[in-house]
Length: 573
Image 1 (tube, rainbow, N blue to C red):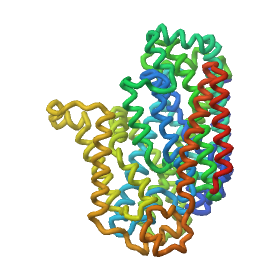
Image 2 (tube, rainbow, N blue to C red):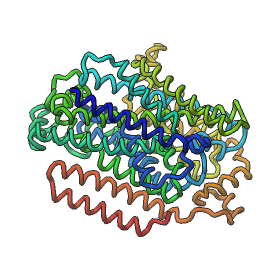
Image 3 (cartoon, rainbow, N blue to C red):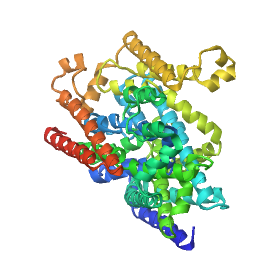
Image 4 (cartoon, helix red, strand yellow):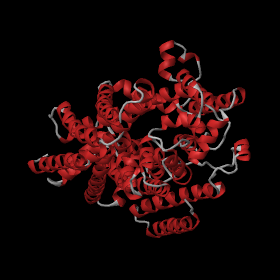
């Protein structure tokens, strides 16, 4: 890092803070303004903000790790979610209902959908677990990525001081301006991040000599047969990763949009804007953004085969290939990725603290000014919790792996609750309990700690996931029929607000046909499937272009455009 590089980074940091502070007056009017920007985002701003918040500083490192382990097919860990709440399922089925719900957090949705004291308990648990604990784990990995990069790019620098400075700048504009400032800086961070990602791919292409040299390098490194498998877009049937791929494509993607995406959906100015923003995110994030990172990852694996880790190799690629000025821009882009994710996570984490814990259970009926101040304090607390988690890196790694299992099967019930009147809070509590207990008992670390791990069959992660899903699903369905349904008046109020599809609302639909039920469930499902095919066609069209397969790329992109046109004719938000 030269003085020019540091000047670029410093200029970006101060500009971000200035832009965030500019919007602070808007944000401090109310809790709604602070956390969901008064529900006034146009689709393009909401969509760009979604993409920026999803592209974290650890994203290229994570992609590099996936490519190192399983080649390009490993990226299906991310691509599978095109089908889910973050993808076309969210765009065509969930976005409009979430926008109509007028909630601030998904934990608040619990008491909108369910009745009774069990709903209040479940809301408090989700506010603490998903809003604080799981959120802190995610932030811990992101903070760890800063240390990984800094050790290579600025060797000898005090990594704690570097992290402190970045967090301080992020905290200033996030605490002062809420989602208004986050969205404004997200737009700039999106532009800088995209430019940096493509610049690195450009210099990597020039360094390695093009895609043919990447193929040759992979062939030399892994052998012709294995290289072919690693460079294909789909995993080969019979390979170890294929089972993981099937699990992800059938079961792992189930769920509502993630909290960061949900927050932008709720902040959109209309149902149409919410749906368009989610579709825009799916196309750009899943269909386009990963390819520059995939190419840089492949080059780093060839250029630095003896690196301490694939992630370290990616960091070495930055310092080796990028000239002064460009390196500063790339570091600014990675800082943009870091800040756009951290500001989102500490903001929506604070929204759970205030909306679902503090205002709901601790201090009721206070003024908006009081809750806005509480929101600012909660923003600081959320960041402090994340930093504490980050410094316990071993437990973070264990917890992240454990979290991938602990809610296996739970995603199914939180999708079904929108469509089936019979789902109640007890069913959701059962799903969380069953998946948590089963995944814990099947956890190698837990089994070894209690001394029974060597006495049971050692089951691979994919199969343990299937076991957890099966037990979880059977458990919550049985509990549904063993417990009383929610209060009828409560269900009617829910339907009047969110206007769900009437397909499985049976007695409520027959008794209250005058509710403005959402029509065309079959059409929405068709658009969901067509949208997923279109995103995948566009995605692999871009991949084919990277491999210089121009005919294949043209056909796939043309297919995506045709599907996009058909969707535009059929879509009735």
